[in-house]
Amino acid sequence: MNESNNTSVNEKIALAQPRIEQAGPLLIAGLREPLDEHAAQKIPQLWQQLTTSWDQIPQRVGATGFGLCIHLHNQEYYYMAGCAVWDFTGLPETFSPFIIPSQTYAIFSHKGTVNSIRATIDFAFDKWLPTSEYNHATAEENALHFFERYGEQFNPHTGEGDIEIWLPVT
Image (cartoon, rainbow, N blue to C red; front, top):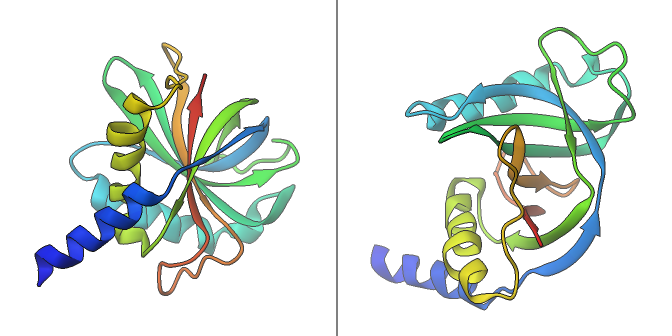
């Protein structure tokens, strides 16, 4: 039974093609942690910290959340849970700034809970990207690898609704 559920999820992902958009720049303020063997525990904690300090973020724009995967250098990455801001003025010391660059993105809608988001990310990188006409847009250091967008219809209690993966492409 579990195997058929996985097949069903994989079939839904395989059928979903991304939309392509030019977007950015977007200023993000958030909390970040290195991606390591403890990431599965750290990322939900970052989101809890962010949502409890949501009102301390000056210049916050809207209720959309952003989860950024940022490539530092070599094989080092960090994850940042954040929100859009007008500017970085008055940002509390615990928050980090990051500018999502203006570029072309392949945008994948994620169906299901946030717990299964890895399947959509894997589909984007491992299945769609190699067979598409696009290349992953990367830079050598401190560059956006991809980001998650949690829209206003996202329900943090159920972990479902309005989740997208934005993959920078050229």
